[in-house]
Amino acid sequence: MNLRLQNIDMTAPSSSERLNMVARFSADLGSMTDLTTMANRIIQELCRAGATTHGALFLLDHEQTCYRRASMVGSIAPGVTPSTLAASHPLPRHLLATNQIMTQGASVVDLQAHHLAAGARGFMEALQAARILPHLNKDRLIAFSILGAAQPLAEESALAESLLAALTQTATNALDTMMLYEDLHRSHTLIKRTDRLKSLETIAGGFAHEIRNPLTSIKTFIQLAPERKDDPQFIQEFSKVVLDDVYRIERLIQEILDYARYMEPQLTDEDFNDIVASCLYFIDVKADSQGIKIEKELAPDLPRVMLDRQQIKQVLLNLFLNAMAAMSKSGGKLRVQTRKLMKPEGKVWAHIEIEDTGEGIQDANLDHIFDPFFTTKHKSGENEGTGLGLTIVHQIIQEHHGEILVKSSVGVGTTFFVSLPALPA
Ligand SMILES: Nc1ncnc2c1ncn2[C@@H]1O[C@H](COP(=O)(O)OP(=O)(O)OP(=O)(O)O)[C@@H](O)[C@H]1O
Ligand SMILES: [Mg+2]
Image (cartoon, rainbow, N blue to C red; front, side, top):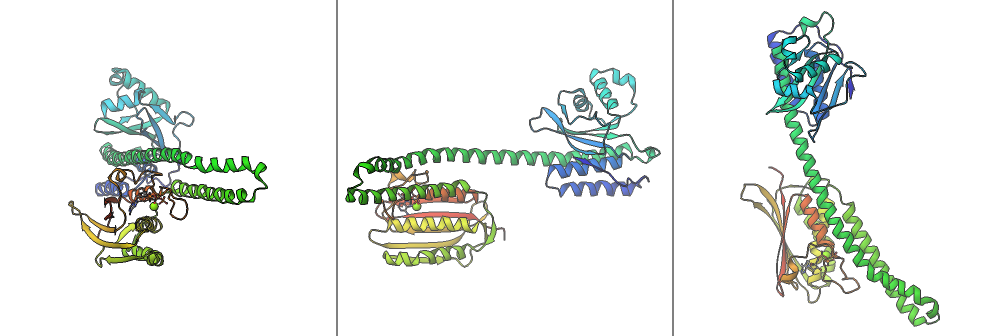
C-alpha cells in the first residue's frame, strides 16, 4: 500500500491544537473497523507530525516471526525499504529493549555500546530515516513506524518529541485492540471452517453409503436388460424400481447441495410469529387430510429477532413435517406455541415449542437424530427420508446462535424446543 501525503502544514501548532490533534486522532482510530485503514491513517498522522512526506508502518505478523509493511506514504529510500523484516533483526530487538523513539544523529558513544543499537542504527541510515517510533504494548513490539527526513526548513515545525510520543502511544493502543480483534476473528473463522469440514466428511461418507444400494440396482438392471429385453413384466417392474432409485439419488444430491451451499445467514429484523404462521398455513391442507389438528398459540409480546427468513422457514417446515410424519398412522395433534423467554443472564429470547402426539423417539435414537443420514424412514415412497432434515435444522440454528432441544416419549409424542436470541429492545 503506497499512499501520497498532500498539503503538509508547515506552521507549528499551538498547545491546544496539539491536544485536539491527539484527541481527534484517537477518536478517528476508535471508529475504524479494519487494520489496513487504521495503518494508513496512523502513518499519515505520524508523517504530518514529523513534517515529512515519507513514512512506513510495519506490523507484527500474526505468527509473530516478522514485521510486515502494512502502509507506506511516499517512499523512504526507494529500493532499500523492505516489505518484511524478521523479528530477530537488530532494529525490532533494539526498539523492544529501549522503547525509545530513535532519531537521526543520536550519541554515537551510546550506540556503539550495544551491537543491537549499532545494527538498528545502520539500518536506519540505510533507509535515510529521520525517526523510528516503537509501538510497544505490554512488553511486545506490535509495530514500528519509520519516518523519512523532515521537509527542508520544516524541521522546527516538526512536533515536539513528547507530542510525537503521545501520538505514537495512541496509535499503539488502537493497533493492539484491532490486532487482538482480528486474531479473535481469525480463530473463530478457523473453528467454524474446521467444524464444517468435519461434518462434510461425515456427509461424504454417508452419501457414498446411501447411493451404493440404488446404484447396485441400476447396475443390475442394465446388466440384465439385454437378455431380458423381451420380458415385458421384467422391464416394466424393474424400470419402476430403477426410476425410484434415480429419484432417490437426485433427492440426496439436492439435499447435499442444500447443505454444502449453505452460507452465512442473511440476517434481517423479523417478526418470528409471522414466519411461524406462514409455515403453518403451508402445511394446513396436508394436516387436515391426515386427521391432524393444529393448535397454535402465538405470543403477542414476542420480541423481534435477527434471522434469515428462508433458513428459519426451512427449520420450521422440517420440524412440522417430521411431526406430521410421526402422526401419519392415526392422526393426532400438533401444538405450536411461541413465547418470550428470559434467560438467567437477563437476555431475552424468542422461543417456540413444537409438540406432536406421534409415535415418539426411542431413547437409543435420541442421541442420533441430528446425525447426517440418521433416519427411521426407510420405506420407499413419499415417506422415505434422507436423514438430513434435522442435520440442516441444527446447522441453521447454530449459525443463528440459537438453541434446539428435544424431549420425547415413545407412544406419547415428541416436543422440539427452539430458542433464538432476540434483538435488544
Ligand atoms: N417429531 C418426531 N417424532 C418422531 N420421530 C422423529 C421426529 N422428528 C424426527 N424424528 C426421528 O428423527 C429421524 C431423523 O429426522 P430427520 O428430519 O433428520 O430425517 P428424516 O425425517 O428421516 O428424513 P429427511 O431428511 O427427509 O427429513 C427421523 O427419521 C425420525 O426417526
Ligand atoms: Mg425430516
